[in-house]
Length: 154
Image 1 (tube, helix red, strand yellow):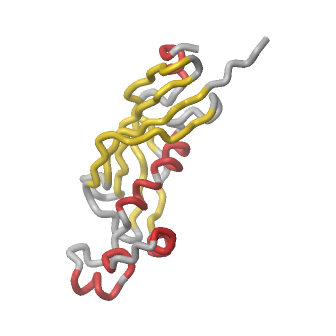
Image 2 (cartoon, helix red, strand yellow):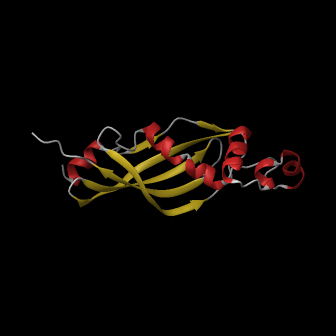
Image 3 (spheres, rainbow, N blue to C red):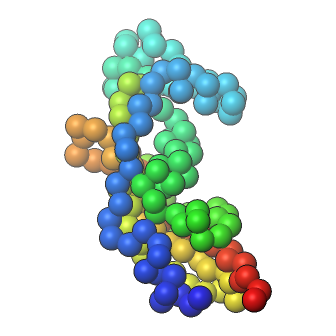
């Protein structure tokens, strides 16, 4: 399989995931896992008094961590074609806070497929995590995976 054929099998066009609720429970669990208990994420009373957002906001890296699941949800990554390995990110920007209780989704489109070696492809998508009811996305990034396709003998 070459890169041109592969492009026709990978999520071409714009793909949009389902909405996911980023509630306080998710934020608290992420804070526990990462040991990042900064008050803007977990202190409900203090954020009411002191935060410009009026309520806790998700960690930027929590929002970023949702990219994989949201990518699978909208069919951006070809799980049925081979092994999908996170390779990296380019041009990552955190653009707007995700307030506790908000719903987010991924809007993504294929940028390129590059054959690196036989059966190994770098696949790049541009993605934006949208916040329901907001004009500015939570983040924008180019996500990169290494797709490994094992050729079957015979």
